[in-house]
Length: 85
Image (cartoon, rainbow, N blue to C red):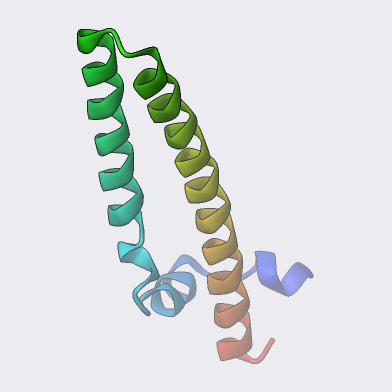
């Protein structure tokens, strides 16, 4: 376990270059759409649209956070296995 925490930033960055560094784009676009729907719901007075947009944005944020944490953990493990520690 200690070897995982001793991986250098360069090793983690190298292990992270497999496409995971671009995954934030989808979540960002999803959140932007939910903000737009939330505002549209407020403007039109549609409570249902506002609630669904806020709920979906909350789920998107939670999934984004868990995915980012998992990706960082995998990158650290790859960096450690690449060094043979």
